[in-house]
Image (tube, rainbow, N blue to C red; front, side):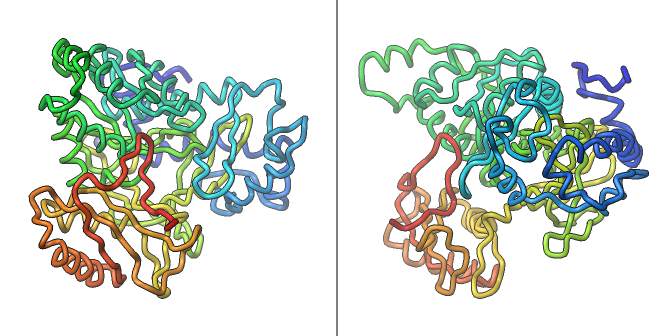
Length: 466
Ligand SMILES: [Zn+2]
């Protein structure tokens, strides 16, 4: 289908699929996924077991709802079946000779899981990633600093492939020390960059200092700094963790880096590392993987499918329309989304838009009530903008602690303008706001600005007391 081949165009990566009424996209997807599902039990021992006794004839995409979910635990169990012939275990659905790449989950919750790709899988993923970055404003003329330094994670090599697919000039600076990154971004006249939201925030702070000329005392550093050209940075893509839904975080990154083009992107390494990305409207991320993946919204408690409507909250569930090496059907992402739009967007795209509000893996239970740590952070950062820095840390008393009967301890940084004598009053205000808005008790520690560690990857929001 020639019209559906990805091509670099001015406005859209894939105009027919992006502007087609969404119901027609779903009908098109149902025709793609049928043959893939029918062949799956013969290819994957895991799916032969999971799909036993189910009707795999797909007349419309709603027929997917009759199929069981695939859970992270299923993938973990499949890994345990690994042997020399199938290093990926019982969900390895392609011979090892056909597999050209393995990606790793971050491993923040247990041993890392691996996902494999054949050359065709890489091509499909790269198309979706390029599509996502294109929606977020990256173009062939951009000089892109890719600041994720770990090639094997979802945001590593796959993102690099996505930028090259668009035809942008890839400058993979991730992994170098921050001062070198900042310097080389100038020397290479970088016009766009991609980083985790944590690192974007950190880089914004460093960038502003660099511009103020306050960095570096060695003669050589001053010489290099003096010789650097002005920043050519115009576009910034951030994501990989919730955070950019906070206006204060957005404002900081844009002011720090001196840009007005800031877009959020998100994906799932297990499925495709970038599937969601913001258009110029910047009101939630569009789904950009419609050529390769079907997405559902479900109630995480009941498993019921939810309708995509503005304001709906649910867990994202993905089904690959084609996947050779490690296929996934109705895979529960554990990402919770707030739907921000389903109508035709001003940009002309028809896919739904959402913001990620947290992960099931991060959910805490305070005296029987579920609360996302990100909800506490968002509330505090927003409610105390100007009095607190957007740097927050919550403490677990023991590794893996989910249940809290005592107040959750939260560290915050005061803004530089706040007098340390009023830290006690600020802490009391934080505790009152969180209790009144979220019905959760916290004990707030107010720290001096710059105290909390900054990371070049993702800042852990929850840390364990040593
Ligand atoms: Zn849009």
